[in-house]
Image: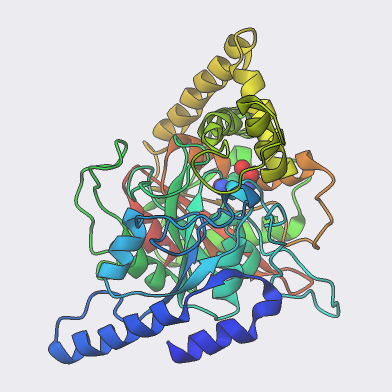
Length: 450
Ligand code: GLN
């Protein structure tokens, strides 16, 4: 733990950590020593973790990378971090992210972008670590922590994992409690893990998952011993290849990577089947209606009264204070989402956009249900490209949203999905493959990934 504390300090130029908590980490390490000596150590005794700054941590500043929450110190601990600490984990600090987890490159953070530890061969250009869990992916990839928590609403664990050559799992919606996780889009948000390999993902997920009566969408089902049950034997399993993911103009390197994945699955004994998910193309536009709609509602609470900063113009009304606080506190991407969300929920457009998106969402979920009648797990690429240069997509929101084309369908359907490092492109940058499983079948996903 002490070595990791020092590594975090030495890596400050990456801007992965917003807050460092060395005292917390070292105290947990001492407690782990004592527990190990007493023979009652938890699953993660003394394991140094980074915590995405979307998880409320008692007494430790939690901002969701937004200016509007500057100085907010929660009076309570999120369920997920409580469980991790009960298992003995040592928190090194709070990790940078896109503001309120809205983004795919960690560039919307009010506290500056995170720099990926990776560089393209022969280049010094700085690359994005992916987003929104970009602090988490950079910190794990740079070996600053053994694992990190992430949250995934439309790909925010899987895409950053793919961009930084690590593994990340988003479990089934409802598997991990959202209590104490700052809300973005509540019907999609799901905590999960970023770590170096599948075994570490399995261990950390086991520690953080489980029923929580404080989250009304939490699933009351037992959590398996994921790591203990890992098996790389895929005999008798069918791996589905959804043909609609083979989009026109796909990078040939990605096609090759996918073919490699198919070959590995065959070597492990799996049968390969082609499946169809006919509404795949509709997933991205559906997501970018549903997620902003929920965000606009969730973010209404930031009004300068209850948390974070307050900007009150001299002699102004209450409404002036709300307006000035929100104008100063939210960044451009968050404002864009609030405007889109408010628009699609407004009386005149609700049926045409929000209601329609909800119906398409149901069709997307049905596609997966049908596909899982003929296969056990799906294999696809995680993201359409490798990591790109900092600043190269910030002027074009649509180009940024296109990053999520392969990850949002599983989010809309609430399915467990994982990205694993699968190879390097011609510039030496990591590329990821995605595995998507049936509801609650994290074990099947982990095993295929393993
Ligand atoms: N990139 C997607 C978005 O900007 C997903 C973010 C996430 O999963 N939190 O909404």
